Length: 312
Length: 252
Image: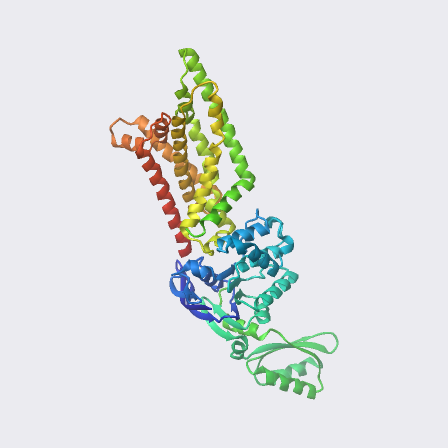
């Protein structure tokens, strides 16, 4: 569906994206991950046709965005990070305008707008002026705009940025619904979002792709992680057992009330098996364990490993 | 010109649903009404002195003999055009246009035509002034038509300059200020003909670009094709440059 080859963009002396290549297969939901300033938004703006590349190509269904921009753009629904809307328009007026701009025929326009409003769940505010809507609703109107005309490819740039937890849940649920019959490239730096809705992940750091593939494959390449344990026992003994275990790179013990302490333990690799051994060793030493939980998700660990040298 | 019509409709909608559009129309009609009353007073006083009526003076006075016509244009055209691109860039809504299947020419054309249609609509009620004047004096409607052609030409060129200034500006205030400076500069350059020797190159150049001289000619019913070429070229050149500015946004 979407193929990017050697894409490069420079801003004066700074290279925002540097010969990046990846593809998004039809029907998949791909998370485009990276820290702030890594080049995600620049990449998405080039794919959407708002910005021209200095080198490389973007094709959507084999149509080049630079050679046939009008045809290619008709295949894309783009929701930028800061959803731009005309505040003085009502939701339905805005979507009708967008539908006409996207060349939806007069006969189909009304249905296209109703369908987009229903999918993005904004039909209850269709006659409300955009300037009076909450941020959550504005995000949804932006999503409805991306959906108008039923484009096969959706580009969503930080769709849950600055939303409250309830709104984030709602937008994620919407994306999951949309993913059933569309190809989606979801740009974000919220890793739980990618783990929740994506099949694949493309990681970008300092303008270069540093990982690309199914999430399980990406995380398996960087087997390492941290766990937090809540244990009952003498803290020095806990520290001794953990520090002597193989592949443990760091141990932090924080004594709590009584003989309870919490421990943060970090493994270098292959932590599934080592964690089992470590738990068994603690139990064998008479130390009680009431909780074991990952300190960070595997993807989160991969993300921090691969983007560690990112600018402050 | 893919995308021209929906954009033009949106532009016109935006002008007529926001208070700014109606405030501008009201100010324009109040100022033009006051200007017309001054001209009528002046012509009536002249006629009383000379003992005869000069119906050409009324039309030429309104369209070509006073500075008020231009002052009103300087006052109202910059606010009309300042928002066209600068506001879209400030709000970020320019991305809606850049990512839609719309050509640069359609985008610029729709913004320009929207402002031009609004400007021309301001002039429609002024026909009533001449209709009222017709009750007391004879009006040559062919001269009137050439006068309206003149205000359309001047407006078309000023609006094209304003749209270009808006595309080059990051905010509406700098768009407003730069448009005022450009149109005022153009007007003052034309006025240089009054202070230079006839036959001098500067005098010729200033006369060729003098809006006051052009409107004086047109208010007498004289349509010189050089004026059509001047305003047509100025408008087209400004619009061409605006499309280049829009194309440059996609590159940077």
